[in-house]
Image (cartoon, rainbow, N blue to C red; front, side, top):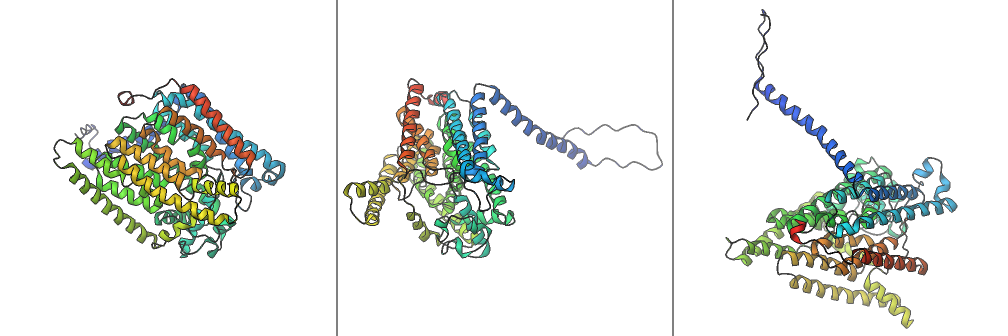
Length: 535
């Protein structure tokens, strides 16, 4: 109902009659008051929520993680993926912080920060695993541990500089699917690693469109572009947390545990908030497609998958499992007499819309479909995180045979064949209902990361996002926690790979085993909450 009009005020008669109050003005005044009140209330509610989390049982861990992020940011100014001008440390006259003993100090600060983040995350873990960690605390852990990284240089990778260079190429009309950044000289290209100066991009048209927008808004300043890109990543990380809560509530999984493992994990904080990897954007779209399919909104789910694939081709792994989720939903509806036919229709509609969205994104970016051919450039990367690559290294070392490249080509081809078989088998075996479909998504993503020709630590964020939704057992989660330690230690703060150093690799393995042992001791008698408790 509209509010009652304000009572008229009795006043002395006047020769000029007062105009009657406008009904629209009378109704808009309370509306404006409500808007102003909501604008003021939201920040106050957020502040109150943060105070409750910081003052509660999670408080010590949250503060420790904040300190870790601050140290990581400060250390990154000397040992991170610095711009060619040296970054903030040089700008304030601390050139010595970026080399020699200063760089050693910076490196120590980075790893102390990583250790604090890990211990803070692990401190929340047993409560999360048992369903006793409030979702609010897990969300605030993600936010409070990510925000101190806002002014940081890119950490543990130089990929963000390449992203911006690709956006600058697109803005200049140079095809990133045909040429490397060196074809477009300028301040953004100067920041790209020499290893990637001549390499075309394997990412989709929406990635290029987003990076083009970031470059334009930055005014041509790479450092400003990094801050803008980090704000976009923060927004996507918030969306990921929100979608995980939605998915958890729809599937009877504890939301606090899901957010703790996927968003507050040092793997996400360091490599997404810190490293600015574009994995976050297609991952959010894929998880959105899953939530929309769970709700029966098939058209929007198709649009979300189209957006995800337009960022990165990895997203196609999730798409086939949406059929099983749609089928499960149709079977649960007593009014549906032919659930298989209806589910196939739902999936066909979603697929058509996904293709249309992908086409629109390609047209909007103005870059064409060359990225399908450019995907193969990833094969240039060689590291032990990919099982086929590790197998080639092992075979070559044991047999001492010449021609490592030939061995690698064979092992990668075998890996592709095995991966294709595994993906089809996982998809077919996880068709029973929506819960098995979610487990299938996680296993398919895990198989892809392990058997793909290329793997980086941040690829495992895809697996982490669906981990708790798949309801893993305690042994599997113990392995996942231990593996998280190894993955973070596999890359140095400046983006260099640690796996080719026997000493660093040994330290990473021992640290992961120690954490896995601690986790098993801390949670050995804990059982994850039932769907009823989780709800």
